[in-house]
Length: 135
Image (cartoon, rainbow, N blue to C red; front, side, top):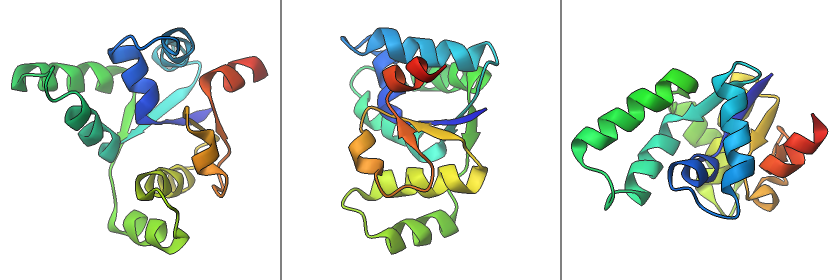
């Protein structure tokens, strides 16, 4: 099963953000133990670095990338993703990019805490708790 993992899920684990940490960590563990194939957009990693920029040195950014790449498959951002996302005319352009990336890679689901932002997605989005309840 292929899952596109949204940045908020990764941040929940990396920053141990409560009350979301536990469920997000379970999704992370599913990807780590090959119960699911976890995909992360290259755009998501750039966003993570931006959000965590005060916490991360250059060395820590490299270490985080290496650690994440052992668990998740990074998917390149393509020009066609940007065009397709713009065509969707969603309020949140980054979420539109996530949606079209998920569709392009054949993801079964998007895992995010912002499910409402993916109502128009061709790939169903679930919160970690919702996804885990379905397993």
